[in-house]
Structures are given as C-alpha cells and as structure tokens.
Length: 238
Figure 1 (cartoon, rainbow, N blue to C red):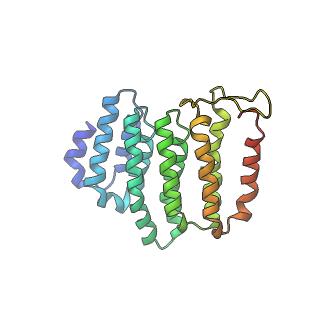
Figure 2: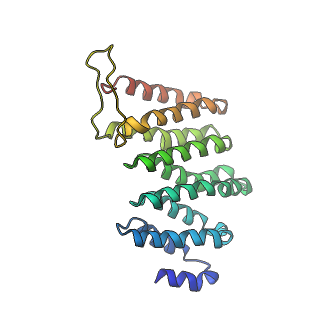
Figure 3: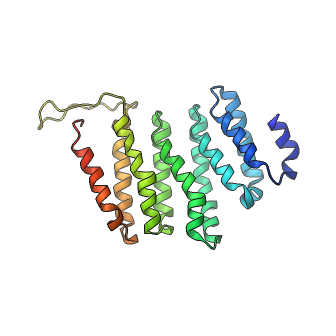
C-alpha cells in the first residue's frame, strides 16, 4: 500500500515524508526479510530519484531511516545501509558548508549519524560491527577538521567512549592468564566483541585523540581517556 502511494504521489508530496520513513523504519526491523527488503528498496529509490527534493526539507528523515536500516536483523540490508550512510556524508558536508550556523548544522546532521554508527559498533554480528566501526572511523578522520574542541568533547563522550562499554557487557568467556608472566593461547572468537572489535575501537579512540590534538581537546579529554585506558588495563581479563 505504501509502495503504491509513494510511486503514485511522490512527485506531488511536499510533506509527510517523516511518516513514510517512519513506516519504513518499522519495516526495517521486521523478522520477515521480504518486508524489510521491500521497504529498503523503496528507500534506495527515493534516495536517488528524490534526493534533491529531500535535501531541501526532509534529508534528516532519510538519514534517520537509513540508520534504522543499519540495525536491521537482516545482515545484508544492514551492511548495505551502512555503505549508503557513508555515501551521504558528502551531502552532509555540503549542508554544513552552506549553513550560516556551522555548529548547529553539525549537530542536526552529524549527531544522529555518528550516534547511530556508535550503536552499530556494539552489534552482535561481527560483519556489521566491524563495518560500522570502519565507517565511523573514516568519517571522523576525514570530516573532523570541521569540529571545534567543544564538539569533539561531545563526540568523544557521547559517541566514542560509550563504544567500549561493549567490552564490559561481552557475554563471551575471555582468556585469562594462569600466571602474570604467561599469556594464554588466544583463538579469535567472532562472537566476542572484546576479541574482534575491542582493539580496533581503542585504536580509533586514541588515534583520533592524537590526530585532533591541535583542536585544543587535551584539557577536555585527557583525564577521561587515561581513566578509560587504566580501567581496562587493570581488568582481570586479558
């Protein structure tokens, strides 16, 4: 029904996209892949055929919808949604540049995207969380020059630091040393966040901190970063 309505009325729609994308977001989480795939296919068509119109007023709704699709229980859909989100970062950058209030634009467009990717880094599926972390890292490294110190403080505390909470909630049994000088034999378990994603997440956090030190973030974040590193160095698990 929604598919027919969008195809018949898309040219004349000036409002209502928020409701349409909300419906697609519900479909994205359906356990039936045919329903989720149909909604995703319509979203992709709208993204390409109506992109110019959506940018004028409803781009954020499209972006939020794709963030929801990145959490779809169907891995093939989730991974493709992540790729599309990466492609849309060029448009977000243009929106920021065109805005007279750059910091406001950063929070309007970048915040839901970055927060959504951060959530996906905690995904139970290795393929999804590794792709989400790779895309999140790429976006922050290439677009972060537009952020000031205060914005970086919010990004670290609201997007990056919460990622490592997955290490605390990882249900998989982690290797432990029998003696302080002996390291256990470790076989990578793809079900374990700590074993597959923890190291890369820490590397992302520390490398971004180093890359953007010139933004004046040391005073804002150094204490939190050192506390975070200490808390995990001192844990019993390897």
